[in-house]
Length: 135
Image 1 (cartoon, rainbow, N blue to C red):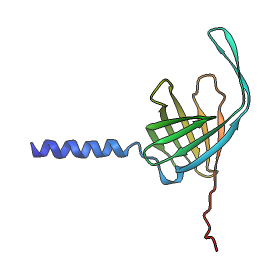
Image 2 (image 1 turned 180 degrees about the vertical axis):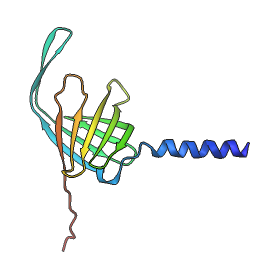
Image 3 (image 1 turned 90 degrees about the horizontal axis):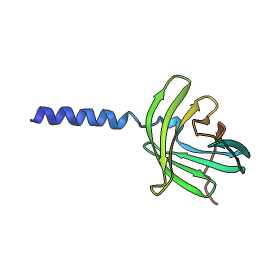
Image 4 (image 1 turned 120 degrees about the vertical axis):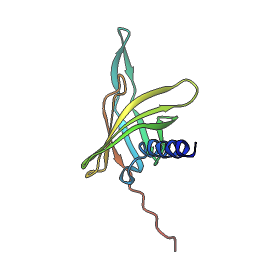
């Protein structure tokens, strides 16, 4: 019984840590999505420009789309030498929920969002916030 419990605990810790993002990814990324059009059920829909902001934490993500705030989690994280590929699911727990992919270029510290149905790919730059002491 103890061996089974130990194996289960080890497996659970490996699974839990497999979706933790590397430290290089953490931070806030922002961009302005330009106006665009997409087709839904044979109807062309025009979308206005909006601001998008992503805040990446070790174990979750916050996605801000205009005035909407969504909470998300990493479904998978693949860390290669030059980039980190993340599959994400976000929701507001009421009526909105969707999946998309994030690709972080480690060298440029830029983040690309892909896989949002009808929304063009977006390139977000990392915000460089520096704290200074007040005299």
